Image (cartoon, rainbow, N blue to C red; front, side):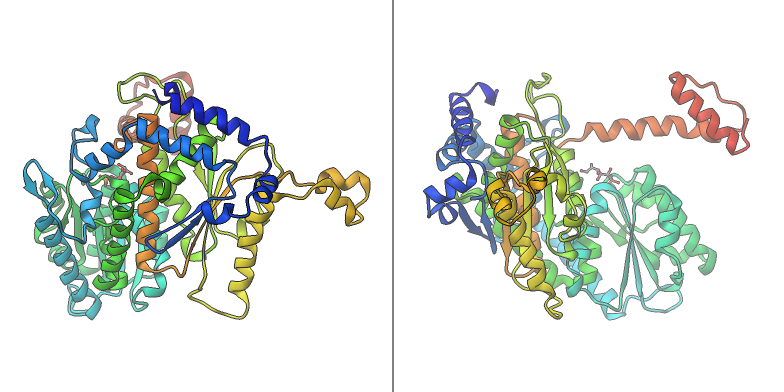
Length: 540
Ligand code: G6Q
């Protein structure tokens, strides 16, 4: 257990000591603090100096990482060892963007030729659709592309499509349908012409209830207008690891883009799951995204922990989580294109490290993954930042911003970034009662207008939001999550919690629709709710 390591005890003692010093004092005492506590990698600049830690505590935390065998575990992941032990699988999303093309072996077989082959097929298909040479059943080019998938088969491409919109072909309209609520399908496809619409059914297993139901609805929607079942071949492609189920659904496996069981759903954006993104931004830009991922992968694998961005973020998060009682972590992108980034990170982080037993199957005696949340700035400032500034909870936050905007209109970007810099400054240094008084504020209001400061933030700054920068950013968080999983000794690459919901819903579904009154054997609450639903729908 990491909590029993001498290095951890040292970190705990030093961190306690650090917290007696305010950030104002820490910055005053060390003019070199900002420089010393900043790193640069893969086009990202990270300033972590506004954290409640001294350089000594950081050293302790790196010693904890070392004592947990982090170096060896990083190597094991990149080398394709079966580190996803509960599913007996390697974890090789890094192979998907291994631009150096060095061999990566799974069971003695190099996976790179297959990875490259699928990328080539995706590129060829994307070129056809983008150029208009891929025609629909009635000979019209494709104008609408609808991705049907959920969780890992939705959040990545949906987030990245939005993030990289300035690079996308604006003649194509993209939609992402995930929810089993038919409203999602109905609203997203509203006004689309089936003759010009291509569906991508994205599902690793090709058995997920929501996705299969949406895919069947999509097929019916298409055939209602196009009549002939032959149309399906021109309007449906699949992204999956399960060729058998794809064929059963009626999609020609020639129109299937594969990936592998060593790609976790929430890590699958750089696999064929990224097909809608490639269709939007084109194969070359998609390649740049992979380059960005790869640059961060190499940084993570090679940089010493002291300069290693994912390791730094991970160990800071662990300090707040396990030594300061922080329950959540905010991600605040100052870029409207990254509006879905917090939601994407919610899955990445919470599904990976939201675990309550360790790798030995014992209930953990310490806190694991935090609640991840956030919204783009400046919107959040006018909503929930109040609590971050003056509330009683400690909420470490990542501020993500860019020096240049894709939409340099008027003074918007400078205005945005002024807020970006001002917020972390205010959070760190606050406003003392004396400062408030000096402004002539009446005494009764002084406590209300005082800001304690010492609210920790990381600032991640890049030149501009490009495909490569997005790749680096996603990889940064993937590896941060990995490091934390190592220290917390949990399995970050399974998600048994998702399976329970899938199984329970499958049991209740027939009870809702049965003609005859079903024998309900749930608890009293669930039984009553099911009965009420049946009654309102006119069922016995
Ligand atoms: C991700 C999870 C989960 C998964 C969805 C969709 O890591 O496993 O979010 O991606 O349940 O699964 P399919 O791709 O198999 O439909």
